[in-house]
Length: 230
Image 1 (spheres, rainbow, N blue to C red):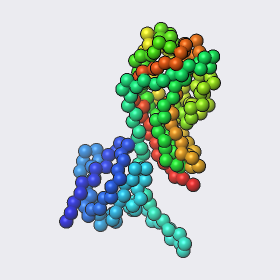
Image 2 (cartoon, rainbow, N blue to C red):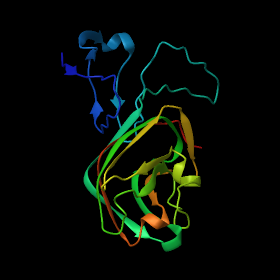
Image 3 (cartoon, rainbow, N blue to C red):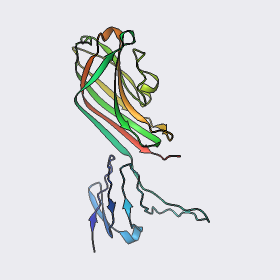
Image 4 (tube, helix red, strand yellow):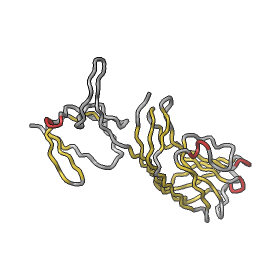
């Protein structure tokens, strides 16, 4: 009898693109092994794909209704957790004169569908700024949003702050720490066109005198799930 170890972690963020076929499944949960005979749960083929959807069928104890012209398939999936790590990343801050200084970076291009985001956790340390920033007391905003429409304002708003509200920062000799802690679930409607996630920064005009850079390190963890498309 062929056997395969299938490790199911209770954390998210996995991405697989291979087909699993087995007759005996070993589940690992909370460091305890349990052997389950595939015949008992009617497992035949499970396909894990990169978009976090499982296209193979697996029963979950529910009884599906039947009708002529109707079929039912139960899919098992999990949350995705995208962890973005920065190590001395230098973001270009473009001087817009009276409109302040602005920088953007795309973090994620979600698949099409309704994307549910239950949490965003971030810890970003500003480690240095270029000569165009008043480093002693420069004031800026940092946020996560779905667009980069920030070329005409000194502060972030609108689509710049839809995923994580702006956090106000004040530099001290070119350094600061920015934390995000968004734990209220939100939905992004990407059923017509996929939703993007952008990290944006805006400086006050008086604190940005020329196009320059902001260097930072840290992590942003975005937990998300594709609810489906139509």
